[in-house]
Image 1 (cartoon, helix red, strand yellow):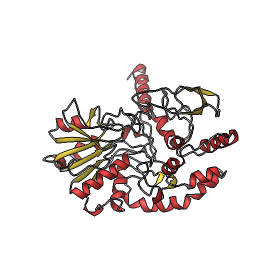
Image 2 (spheres, rainbow, N blue to C red; image 1 turned 60 degrees about the vertical axis):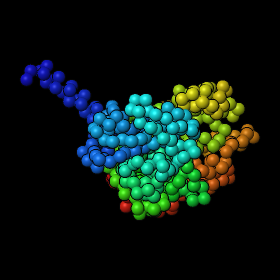
Image 3 (cartoon, one colour; image 1 turned 135 degrees about the vertical axis):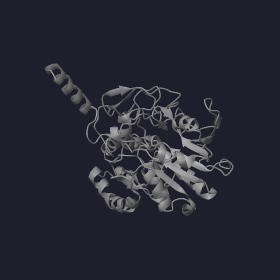
Image 4 (cartoon, rainbow, N blue to C red; image 1 turned 60 degrees about the horizontal axis):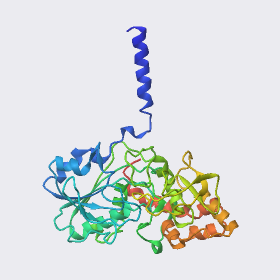
Length: 389
């Protein structure tokens, strides 16, 4: 081997190492891409899919993949944001026909959140494959809850194809109190629970959080070569207002601002990556929310010039309360109402204690100390259901 060949080999090896760093998610294989582990169970079954745009097998949608494999897919059950993921937050999803496959798409976000017996009359197995982001108030896990319950009650098998949790390294925030249960918080888990949807499905069944839990035939296909502390970059945006990894990282902290007068960038090209207000200036960065039909039809502070913070280069992770506390202080000083939807704040938090602590002027350290005992109990409670180190 001559000198030039040796140099070329060294450069190639260095290039390969740059794209295969230890601890990264390149080696991770999601359940949907492990066909041998679930296709045999689906053959001969009439299958309903709970899927959206994140339900991919490589570059192919799971629906198309299963049909190509000869699986009898009879319908799609569409969650929040719709089957293709192009509906805004809170938008009612309507029944339709998928133009590509001709399959009926039945909404389970809107008036019907739990599939009815009529919707599942021709179904033997339900497959759930949706990318979650690890925050209790992200509604896909609430949808999974209702689908599991319907399956248990109607004697239908349930299969969850698991995917990594991009915020899986964090277990933080208040544990939900039953009095504050809602569709943005259904389970006695912390705001950041550190579990995958597969692990949560096992816990929902195991803890009896659904009716007739003991009757549910549940199968979870795990992610291969995954550890919850690994960084995981989502290949497809999980919803219209979480367009990139930075937004997903900031989402647990910024979503609480939804119950306040502060904009967190809905109606901009960088949702969940900025924050600000038109009257109470929270920083020097300026932006102006506008109507964006596919992601924010009527955003907060639409058409106003908003002053605040640009967090697109922030290294904030997990649950950070400093932004919320400092914004509340600024609003209080200006005599402007901060918590414009206090009941919604309590639903997002899973308790009224967080809002009341902020209003009382408690420090972040004091607030965090208040939920440590509950977090310790939760970690012990979840232990039997964990699939990954």
